[in-house]
Length: 70
Image (tube, rainbow, N blue to C red; front, side):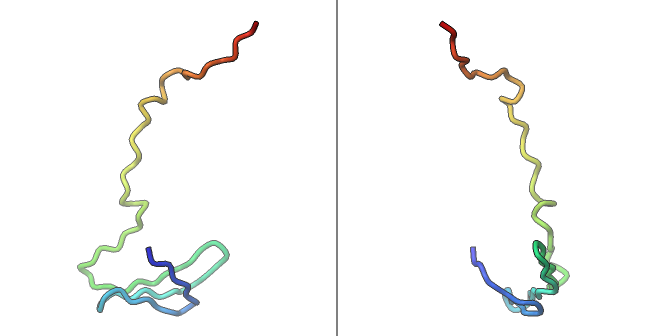
């Protein structure tokens, strides 16, 4: 992963035809402008990731040992 520091209105180029501009920076949020050809899909990762599979162990009782009393 490449990690870069950019200021407002600075740009990144990805190949010859994709340009990313830093539009706004707040405390915990960055707004990006993306210019790319129409044949490139631009998707947020959280919309593409499948939902995690349910945990098969979630419905089973705990197997933890409880301390025995003497």
